Image (tube, rainbow over all chains, first blue to last red):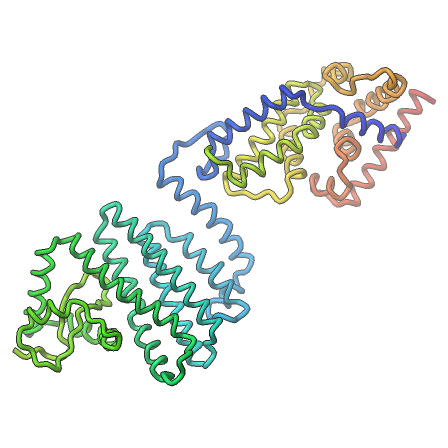
Length: 318
Length: 168
């Protein structure tokens, strides 16, 4: 009997679709696949087909990724929570960067949100470098990893900004750019201090990272001017710039004090770098300020994002 | 689609690899070549939808059989009027001359299996036609491997008993 069944099995394996049937069914399936591409989210129905537009397909890709990542997160909820405070070299660090942060990425749906996230993550990387440096644990490998990740965040931030510009959202692009610039400014100052403390050693592992941060900071400053130009046009920029200097002379300058304090760190940094954008401009505007006044022309840590203001750190003497 | 993605390629390979055995299973169950062909198509369509909706498939073979099984439960069960003759007419076991005797025996076995209840038929089919191990059948049916083995033993005993009645 079992032998018979075995023979039956063998015999049945010879039963198959004819080449024509096979091809016909394959063709139908291919057509279905074409009508229901992977990046179009489908409901439960088999036949219904939603039209796709770019936003929709973008969303669905995100959604698919998000579901997967959220499942991964749920499976490892406490792990990912514990991973949040991890540093390069820790076992949980990959969970932090590859799971937690990718979930954040999946949740950020607009270019604005993504750019904001990249700025946050770039600052996080620098924060990690500081923490490791404080512990004396920032070795070449950790520094290289952080530098690499920092660069990635910076690049992705630029991509999102470029996309915002491409659709003429200059305000949002400027804000995102300023976000990034502000996010790294304070960290840059701290890292520069670490580097200065250890200036004797020519092979400080964080050197590469700092060079990268300086480069970004400089580029963001330049981009900011460019974006401002796109928003207001050249003359508007000049007007804004000169009226701000005037403002500083006046008394009613409530908001700017805050800005000045926050700006100080990066101001000093910039001096160390020998990089003072728009200095010329200010000399013209400021006229005869005393030689010792330092000028911060670059950083705005506030959320309004667009700032081409020249504000004297010290009083500008007229 | 311009260039097939990895998912598309994997999916089409799954079709090329498993279409025939799914067809065989379906044909045995519905006794109708066109119906079986439709079932194969529907199985892959639903699997594709599952993938498009963000689902994953670790192992295509059991997954496809699972889908086919659900389709059968949902109303593609064989029509009671269909007979073994129809099954044979529809392309099962085309007889080669040297196999004539065996074909007769097989027809008996088929007839016996054909007369058994749906659950037993499915079990025997999954085990002996589709070649699944009891453990794999267990996963498909959502029962333990032990239950599958026990039920298979009973089903086989029934087949033997009925064969003895036909051919003592």
